[in-house]
Length: 333
Ligand code: PIR
Ligand code: CA
Image 1 (cartoon, rainbow, N blue to C red):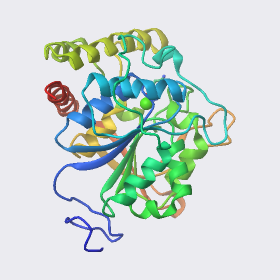
Image 2 (cartoon, rainbow, N blue to C red):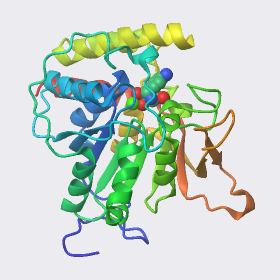
Image 3 (tube, rainbow, N blue to C red):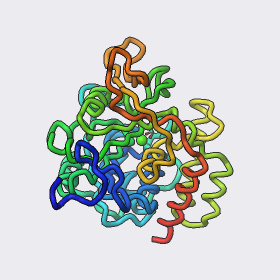
């Protein structure tokens, strides 16, 4: 610890266990309907200080998801937060997009305004590295809600940040099955080599996977509560849910769409939102039918260290109260 470090309770590795005030995060995303909700929660929640938005190819091409991130920022009046484009393709594999769920634009449904918020000219990975280095050690939490390409690149480009990041709280994976294949969730399957790097690095990693996010279903009652806010960002959110719900119904038979990505943000803002268990997660990279699987060991077979944390249950009421309060708060901005 140095005198530039922030106050708080420090763990054995010098990381803050429960420092005061809002948690500073970098949101690394691929908007994406549910990524848009993650941006709104990160901006509107009193428990979060959003320091940067970086984008990564995933739900759609880098160009499209970056445009979408800036459109969300424009609708929500998010200024003063750097938005920077990161990796345009996974580390090893060809780009795989999710047009079946997110449409041709990556965020189909609502009309998207021409962005008025600027694009930061820096590479997204540089923004991650520079933001982490510019803040006290142990203060920045990385919240990836797309493929882990940028986060892996940052760890390799600047290994010093691995020891400075407070923790990585990611939406991806799951222990109870996938959504693209029987075994694999999209964000991990899109770039399993990056996921392997991120889970294997010496920073704390928390996985908020499908086991949690499939509990975050935006039912008609939830959509009605958002609509009742009566603001432009609320109307935008409702339109996102209408399209996302139709696609989820057609593609996966869901009665209501799961908004995956804000679950990770919500956990950072308030640990009561997601129940966690210690585990060890390995990323399958060579399986015939299991590539992209997050092989999750809750027991520590063979003496393996339970060095990750895995989300197992969502507090739905708390989650939606936080999400709706955040949309209401950004509407006033
Ligand atoms: C959601 C996603 C990709 C594919 C499908 N079928 C559904 C996106 C979401 O943005 C979320 O981050 C994650 N990937 C869920 O798999
Ligand atoms: Ca996403």
